[in-house]
Length: 288
Image (cartoon, rainbow, N blue to C red):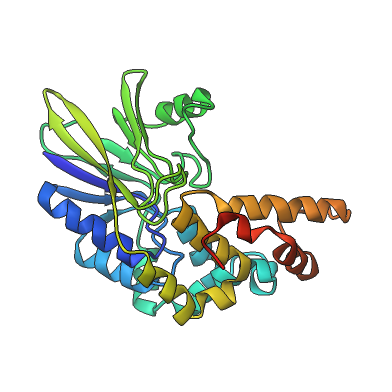
């Protein structure tokens, strides 16, 4: 029995195509996606393809944010500040059919095959899709997460960094990111799980693909123009394997603090524009 587990596709159709082509040779019994399907220029196409493939999907934090925006549940700042331009672009372009598909997805799924240990699949942790598990930094969060599920296995995403670990008699893994790894690798990541000798054997995969069509789509769809610095950082993160988005956000928040702004999660447009202007985009060497 086999499972292909993916995560963090983020509307990157070229990366998803590359992974699905690689998955064909593996012939899994389940195609599973641990959330964050939305975000990039091909969100509609990604959702339609995963629906057609009957993938078992969960909601990630980006997906939940988009649903909240469309349900008018999020803060008013999401609708006005430049900081959230990428979210607004996704909301304006998502089709009604894909909204319904996204809204039908749960935050947890159990991957179960005959004769195999079931796997609980979430995005961040079982208690919060926004929470990150970094086993090399803090095992207590992993221990808490494993303690929250009855199944002997836990699959998660969110961090864009692949890992696997046996802990407290349970298997935990993160397949990395289809859209854009943040562990220094450039390409599309996923994991192959195969039931052998009474346990799941996990192989992490990195698939190369042509990034040029994705860059073109950021321009041609208007996502880069409307998304601004966040979209620029997101694209650069994909192209470099580094967390350029977080680096920019930290820079912008430090700038806000210097100006006496205490709530650095919602940045005024004048601070956002200044951060975009002053940030050292050129240090990443790809975007010119």
